[in-house]
Image (cartoon, rainbow, N blue to C red; front, side, top):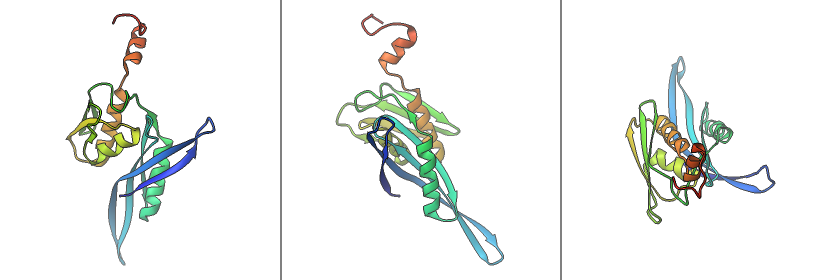
Length: 172
């Protein structure tokens, strides 16, 4: 499971560094007359480490082709997430299927305290300090989707107050 860094040009003309991480590769066997025929699926997470992250799923008869398809899919489906400094703004529980992920903010210097699939997503998003716990399903696809669900629920103080129609200078 390898990391791959690829440079892509941003709409404003600058370069953004997209980090891709292979989270899971699955091998599937089909029994045919001549023996077994294998196919592969890959789950890849991509992010710019500045608040944009996405995941992709690809299937092919070769591992490299499956990873290539998944990485293209992950770049296509990137979403923006709200971050505060190097951590998340508040605690949140994300759910998808049987997978549940609890994310909590951490003080500077804590690092990423998270398991494999959750770690891949928050690293790609650009989080440096976080406490995370995966609850429920251990299926990497559901854990990645639950983590993205949690990250998209995040709101900064400014976004929250703007939704209420208040401004930063007013007392909440």
